[in-house]
Image 1 (cartoon, rainbow, N blue to C red):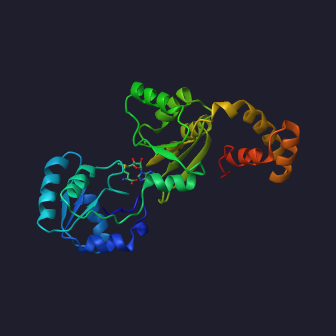
Image 2 (cartoon, rainbow, N blue to C red):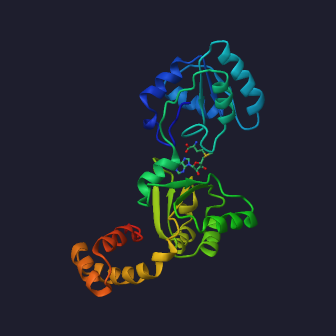
Image 3 (cartoon, rainbow, N blue to C red):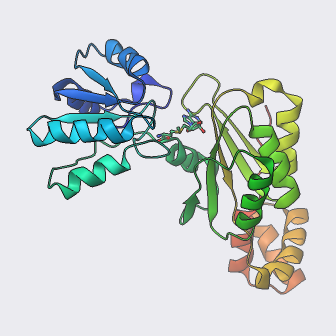
Length: 277
Ligand code: SAM
């Protein structure tokens, strides 16, 4: 399983490059796309198409060749195979047949986005692409609204604005989120803040709706601490506008009666406003 760049060719690892050059065959989602990558690195390994429409037949053929002793690399158009890409049935069949399946790990848009979003990253859920129809998407958003962990999904340029508009309505305009666009590419952009604010920026600037997107949404706050934290956060925000963190926390503790370590946590986790251009 060979991960390939999500935009910047410099992200192909030396081991991925070596593996792609050494195997007998490369199974690729889109052979034209992968041929360009191989050409760039001077790799001449034969290619065969393996995608969601021929997964069953081609999977059987690849398994047959693997069992005959060939080495085969699986790549997707970008990032890590099997992550919102085909391949898991082939991996499963290969492992069940006692064949060795080994990763050459590397880029994945989801992990790249999480690493720069500044949202809680200790626990998270990945939801792949949201449903395409508005009704199903809103149902899905309704189910996600109570999720406590950071939730992450992929979205296309055609639907990013509509999905964020639905998110504002169903999950709430104030929910903090980050939209990571065109990661590792020339137009890499991170927009973060309240959902309504991010949507406004996307609606005002057509360029912000172009390219590839990962959306990361902060999990729902726990309802028991919500009311008290809300007041403490309000006081903290006022103080932080004029004071350094330590002083603001000390004063907020005296005003609200909250513990200092809780206030530090609130201060560090409060929504980050987008950096000024
Ligand atoms: N297997 C890939 C991976 O590991 O990231 C994901 C494949 S999925 C079919 C493609 C989606 O990933 C895109 O529609 C977009 O949502 C996201 N994506 C891929 N490259 C990206 C990038 N450079 N910046 C932001 N999102 C990206």
